[in-house]
Image (cartoon, rainbow over all chains, first blue to last red; front, top):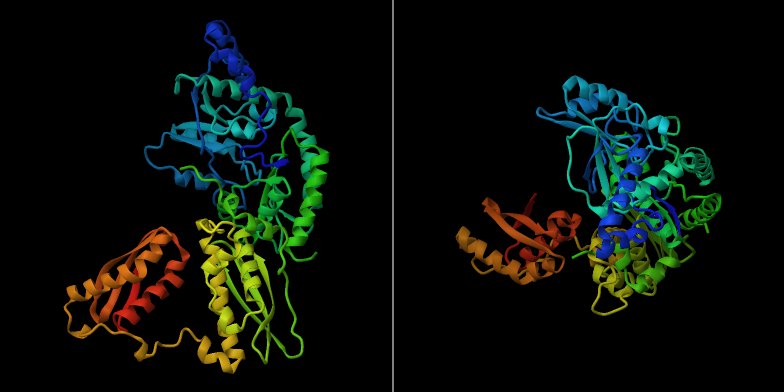
Length: 305
Length: 247
């Protein structure tokens, strides 16, 4: 199986929770081993989002559906600050924005939104699940940060809200926190690869798909997400046959369509769009195999074979 | 109850058919054989379907059939089923094929649908395409035009007008319509998780209805289902009834 879907549950980090399960599931080991394990997990999460350690952080477990998607914009694909401004209702307490679109990889205007939040005296929340390097993460100065577990190869349904002031503070779910901590550690170890090697593989994939048009290729995108339209192909048919060939691109097609529609992409193109999210697990062998199988699927769907 | 995505609930026969599409592509006419094509689109799903029939001009038998499908696997499979079922049939037989026939073609077990209920939109696209083929055949083959034109007004003799319909009060008329809906419509739409409710009977027998359940979100609610309700009430109650859905 080749996972090219870094924006929903992909290949979880091996031993995510299982290896640590006995730590908190066996009463005779309970107290002595539990706290170091939890402490390690929290420190890994803190390091992932750019803090030295977790000593001064406040956490809250977070579940699914925390992703804002790109909306109307002056130039396609990106969230425009004016749209954000007009969307703020009276009494709003916070804006939460993702670092980038999980479908197209386009970066969101983080600095401008931060300024807007300061102007309006509301909390600025940032979803850093798709951030990929320390240079990018540093200096955002968000009031709180969100990590979505399945986007960093953790367990689906896990996530965490982190703040440096006590706006949130509650008890943590131990298994979920430890699995998230392990996923964060694995992400930290793979950061160099995500930035460089994954970008190279993504470029190869983009170049090799016959007749493909890469959306927003002239704009700044994160290095591991790409959205491609393939003429005379319907996305659902393509996804079905790719899955049948053990290739797994992004499958949240309804959200993708909404994102692209709001970004000004033509309706016909939207229904031929697929999105891919590469990960630290993706290697050249997988990309070569995916390219070969995709060419076959496209030929079959077009009746060219 | 947690359900798997509907692709996983396709019957094994249907999945097997998708692995090797037999009728994908276009066809060309040959002497004595006419090429008939019909097409349909689903705007919401961005899908489209074109079906091609090669029809022997003398016997009016469909000698070959194919499809060009831009859509998901359910639409592709339904198109395959229609092509398979059409080949060898006379046009007059083929145009009577229904969504149930398409489903039966791919059933692996008699008690389990081959196409899960989420496929209904795709099945409707195929049935709409079949309607387009019927119209084209009506135009191309004069011998069939009267047989195939299902849109023609119903002959008065075939309609069983409710006795004294014109003299009934509004409440009495509604009671008669309710009875007809209970008998002829609701049992069928409820099979798909839907329902029909009378909102009002206006002047001139204009019947305002509301869809419930799955019907409220089904594309066929303004197409095939509405047409069925209209025809059923015209046939069993009064030809003066005009059905208008309220959304």
